[in-house]
Length: 315
Image (tube, rainbow, N blue to C red):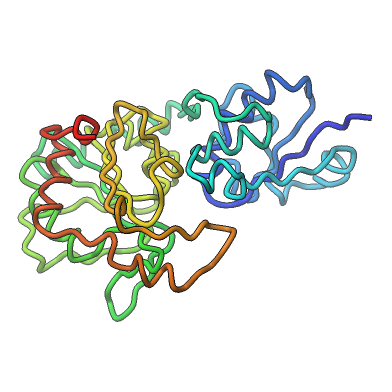
C-alpha cells in the first residue's frame, strides 16, 4: 500500500520558500494527489499559492494528527544532508527536489510567492513614503545580517561569518546614500545616529515577511547576505547583489540568475562546515573575518549594486 505523504518542513522562511518548486513538481509527477505539508516554520510562504496553500498546515492546527497525519506517511526532508548539496552540486531548492522527486539535479522554476493586493499596497505605500521623506527616486533595500547575528558589547557579531561587519556596513551606507533612499531590513534594531550619514535610513517596524517581499518587489535593488532577503528578492524578481562569505554561492544563492549578482568574499579563503551535519568551532574561527571588506571591496560591491561592474563577466 502506497500512502500519501505528510511532508514536515522545519527551519525558517527561506527554507519554506525554497521548498516550493520541488513540492510543485511532486504534485505534478508523483501521482500522490492527497499529500500535505506541515510547516514548523509557519505557512506564510505558501499563502495564496494556487496549488500548495490548501495543503499547508501549521503544526498547531486543531486535531491535525487525527484528521490529517495519522493515515499518511510522515516524511522529514533535510536538504542540507543531500550529497549533492554538501558537495556543492546544487542549491537548496534542488536539494529539496532530489529528496522529494529523485530526478537528480535539474533546473527549477523560481518559487511562486503569490502576494495579495493588500500586501502589494502596503509595499507601495511604504515605498512612496520613503521616497518622499528622503527625496531620492531610487530605493535600495539592505539586509546586512543573517540569523547568526548577536550583539556583544553593543556590536553586532555573526560567528557563522554570513553577515556584514557592522563597521563596513556603516561605511557602505555613507557611500550608497548618495544615490539611493536606503531601507534597512533587520530584526535587530540598528543605531546609526552619529555615524555621519546625511540622510535617514528607513527602518520599518512590524512588517511581516510577505509585506517585506512586496516592498522588495517595488524597490530598485536589494543588497544582502546569506539570509532570507535574497531568496525573497529572487522570488519577486528584484535585481539583487548578494555578498557571500563562509557558505558557497552554489548552495545558498542563484549564480545562474541574470538579475542576481554575487560577490563571493570567501572564494579562496573559506573552510566549509556543512550546516546540520557538523558544528566545528575551528572552522568558525578560521572564517571569522571572511566578510570583512576594506575600502576597495566596499567600492566594488557598490559598483555591482549600481550596475557599473558585472561579476559574471569577470569569471
